[in-house]
Length: 411
Ligand code: ADP
Ligand code: ASP
Ligand code: MG
Image (cartoon, rainbow, N blue to C red):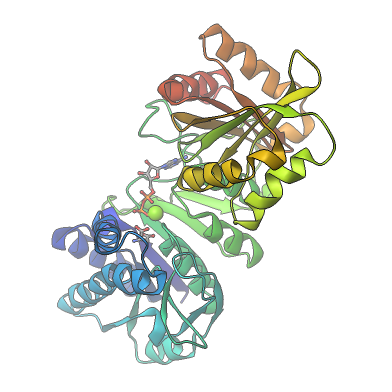
């Protein structure tokens, strides 16, 4: 007998028929003799609708009340999945985050899990019950208020629960049958990977592949949770194994580049003719850091007159206006001539642990993109990835070009 966590995302519980299908997947594992904790997302589109309602009710909303509203989507599906399981003759009950409890920080809207007590779920397992847990939700220990874990947070609920109840496996069921070399919805030649290294998955997730929330991959890596990404649309009687996220050592055939990701959640800011003297970078970036704005790519170019410099960097799209107004306020201190901004940009990245031992991987990409007439606005590199910033209109062309260039296209 094993203990499993089975997580079902929004499209997998989008309506009652799909919820019945989820119940069949769970029944298969229960019939095989396993103890099962199910983690569910809200029905697809529901969280967006709830977020929209909050913004409509109050443009500068109180994030504590936002969490009360958006956590409700998962409450509905946990009850419905429990009902569907009972309908198949299984013992099942729903659990809200606060009932377990899943304790979190008080960073409402993007809280981090700080503790998870599996004791009450153990009692349920001893009674032969399937636990159906609302993903995405937690509770702050001191205030007792409901929190949520940030968009896509049910993945993190599932992995944290798997670690907390010492599950043998965490299966993330979604609408694709595994992790692909790039988003299969934009590149039809994307290939499904049997295994992906934790570090690569971490980069892919943080660079835009939304198939797993970044934090869930971190937790899986730290707690060594055996995590699979697989499809809920497989026949419940005959499912495929999906993609295993695992240690690098477990992967025999390593490619140089494993995957291509893209993120439209990126905005570019350029300050022209900034005085080229010590302290300028600090004058720009310290106020942004103080405002909790994450600056990603940075490039500095000396202007023709050599006494000034141009500085380009990126911030998350959601922080663009805030960043701009902070910089406008400190204009006299930084002494720049103009501020230019662009939100119609995309960051395309190539990821692979093989880059550690191969030189010239990124250079190849610059040439291939130039041949397609794609202009590169900014570049960053690190040990196992490089990213380029380009016009959003070229997203698909750039992703496809890099995907072919590194031999990732399926035959
Ligand atoms: P869920 O609702 O089940 O949590 P998500 O929509 O959050 O599902 O994540 C699954 C989606 O992630 C897929 O439909 C796919 O379009 C997208 N995706 C992006 N990059 C990848 C990738 N490299 N491999 C697989 N899916 C990817
Ligand atoms: N329902 C939440 C969201 O849409 C959490 C999740 O699905 O993982 O972000
Ligand atoms: Mg998701």
